[in-house]
Amino acid sequence: MNRYLAGFVVLLVAGVCCLALLDISQNDDTSVETEDAVHPAFTSSAPSRSVTVEEEQPEAEELVEPEVEALSNVDAKEVAAEPMIEAPMKIETEPEEMVSLDSFDRPYNHTVTEESFLKMSPEDQREVIDDVVADARELKMGVMGCYQETQELIKAGDYSAAEKKVSEILDASIAYDGGEGTLTLSRVIGLNSQNDLLGMMSQIYGAANRTDEKAEVDERMQEIGQSMKTLRERQDKSYNMYWSG
Image (cartoon, rainbow, N blue to C red; front, side, top):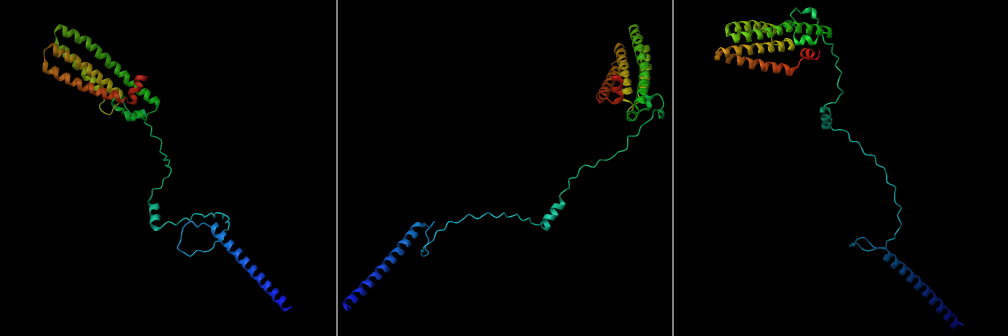
């Protein structure tokens, strides 16, 4: 009986030992599989340990509002120094003062300036143009008559009479010109008449063989021609109204 009991105890102890060995073996296999499944991204000198891999859920990105930094004292001064761009102010100007023709005496080519002419009403401007052209027409007729008489006197050899006749009309033409600042129209008409009369005078001096006097007249004609060119290129209002009317 004791022999059977002892044998049973031995078998029981042997069974317990077998179960214990089997449990240890299973634990070792699990550890190895876990270590094999994990592959570190880099090799480290730190002691190795088992790692449990867990699937991480991506975290939602937090919206971070940018912080607006307050201007420092230096920045504030720089902003204050920058010029402010403003819409241009509308400056109200008073209407240009009108000039009445009643304040000018005849002949208008002597009293009315181009600046005053621009400030007149259209009716007054037309009256000035008509008056200036009427006087110019008389001057032009005198120049044409002088030319015909001069040609006859040159053919006759009467150079002194021809010179006197041209000088009379030339003085009238110079008197017609109101000078610098007056109407451009009257200035061009006056200078043009002077140029024609000086041409007659140059012809007289040439026929009379008075070369020095002819050279002086020719030089004066060049100066007048340049003045007329300048006035025509400027084309002020009075001059334009004459040619367009």
